[in-house]
Structures are given as structure tokens and as C-alpha cells.
Length: 291
Image 1 (cartoon, helix red, strand yellow):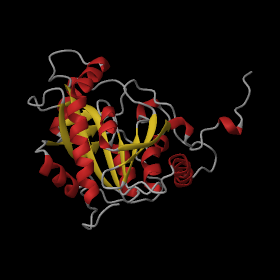
Image 2: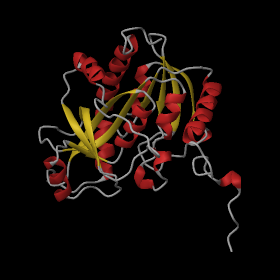
Image 3: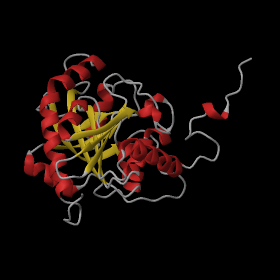
């Protein structure tokens, strides 16, 4: 008979009586200790195709494996770096770059999916930049096209909010931040639809997503955005169109295709995100310097 798990083997967010905000606060303190940075101003989660962007955003202050921070796990998906990086921006502000994303389809529960976002908020970040690789419904979006997320439809049948927690999601993907981006690059916008995964959507499901107002389909981001809003952060979302969605694409979908499209677009995405983060760092929501 298998031995019962010791308390040390229980994930911090799964332990009896665990409070997500308290685990996030512990994680933020570890990040502050490891980086020597008391407060990070902007946080970024880098999804498929976006990882190289961290090299262009600012000066590296510290980097370490995410699993060394309470509540984080080693990424299960190829294409994610599994590290946490602290960067000093040209403005003097600090960015927290999260390369470890837990997907809902991994089966660990919503708390672990949004732990990185809650940790970023506890670390002081007021702006959360969420990126992903996704399928596009617009046939004009070739693989490698970055698109701003204007809104989302959550088809996971789950929420990161617990109990009677009512959070307004109007303007969830900040119109202010999207306007700043469009000053730099007139990107198209679209509504992101999060499915549970890990299987890709069927052509019928893609048609449904389009019928209900979706433009982009993927397996992340929406739950994280909700948690970011609950934590009081402004949210900016980008999708890298890695492939045409099922039924629109003439060829079968594969994760290798996602990785290939991401690699091909890396240089452009890195340059774009570096300019965006630098612009955001200049002012906060009140027009005051972030740093």
C-alpha cells in the first residue's frame, strides 16, 4: 500500500485551509529576496512564441527556476521557459517576467492556474501583460500575426473567484493600454475564446466560437485575466496567431506548428513587446511615472 503524502509533499495551494492570497504573498516575498527588488511595477506572462521578448525588454537583474518559488510548478508544456526573471527597464521601473504557466487542462485546479498573476500583484505589479499563441478565425491573419485581445469568452466552466466574490469585468482588457499599443503599431483586435483543452477545437466548435463573437481560440489567458482584475491590475492581452483555427485551416493542427510559428515570429514579437513595455512604463493610469 502506498505511503500517505507528507505535509511537505502537498502543494501549498492544495493544503487544507490554504488561502491563495497568502501563498501569493509568500511567493512575492521569495521573489523580492531572490531579486533584491522590493517592488515590481509591470508583470508579463510569456506564452508560446513570446519567450524571446524578455531579452529585449530590459537589463536582467535576476533569473531563477519558477519551481523554487512557493506555489509554482515546473511547466508541462514545451515552449515555456519555466523561469522567473526580474528586469530593470530603461525608465528605472522593474518588470517581472513569468515564463512558467500552468494550464487549466493540466488538471491542477484554477488556483494554480492563476497563482502567477496573484503573485505578480503581491509583488507590486499594477499592470499585467498576458500573451499566448492561439488559433485565428480571420483568414487574413497569417501565422505569426500578433493581435490585441479586446475581450474574452470563458468556455472553461470555471472561475478563479471563490465564494461571493463579484468582480466587474467591463473593460477587462484595458482600452487605455490598447490605445497606447496602437500608437506604436496599428494591430488588429479580437475577442479571445478560452476552451478547456488540451485537445484542439473541432471545426464545429470553432464555428460556434465565431457565432458567439469570438475571433481567437486558445487554452489560456481568460482565467488569468479575471484573477488580475480581482487583484486590481490593469490587463493587456496579446495573441500570436500561430495557425488558422480548425475548419479554417486546410491542414490538421499540431503543437509543432504552434512552436514553429512562434519561432518564426520571435524577433518581431520581441521588438514589439519591448517598445510596448517601455511606453507603458512611462505613465500609469493617472498619467504619473510608474517608476
